[in-house]
Length: 394
Image (cartoon, rainbow, N blue to C red; front, top):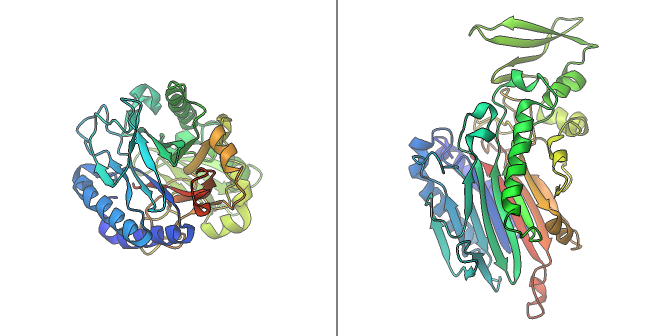
């Protein structure tokens, strides 16, 4: 959601509409990170219009008229600003939808659509920005988590939007396995889970989705896939900017197999050869989720969601700024996982807009059913389909 908004919005919205149309959800949850983009100070004024347009489109097309919208817009408050946002919508067929007031502990009926953008005093949301001690090198930025508790026909569920720390430097990321950044993300997610557990409601089904910034083990990616020592040699050269430049050159031809700078990662991978030849090999290097055994994820069969080109004409291509990675994920705690697997319906877990420019992160969507409802509900509502989507808007 940055200065390219006008150019990207039509294609982005069209792809979102397509996936919602194919899933026909009774409950829709969309999480946003990096509201306003990198230039958030200049772009924040566009956010209200964006959310209103998105709501109007979805409510009119899919009868998703009740709901909540929120975006964190007060970037002047450096202690609380997270740049997170969300949109939760409920189909007209849903008999009862309510949101927990964390201040009173009571659920309050959702009877229409409400859009808020306050930074503090949020009774329906638990929002927390990470303290600087959790960040790599203690350099804080607009990252944190946002929790909301919903009740749908008596079924209570926690939805948590999360944005963890990125790899600030490719060269530092390749120095160790796991990288210093992976360790910080591990600590950050453990901090979030500890904060949520403090409520002593760990048996409530919970879905965490957002930009976890999980990266492939970069050191192993180089050594095992892109430039093994049997075929390549590492060279350290001085860049034009005076900073080190890592090159991995073919032993026979001298060709650069990989070239790395702080924000450059030239490699031979692309969407085509990842999907056809390297998906399983890369997925084995996706090790960061293994540190959190209490969280579950449906099988990934899609290409890494990041970093795609931001050129509107190159929506299928990766940028060469970082190694491809499954940054954007949808994870379930044990109660949510057991419930989702108790329903005999298909699950769809995929990226959105495969052929369309959606920004540097492709949205990731999970369509699944939970056993929601009671004996008074009609048979068509005995299992509510929930579509959850994560969209990093940088």
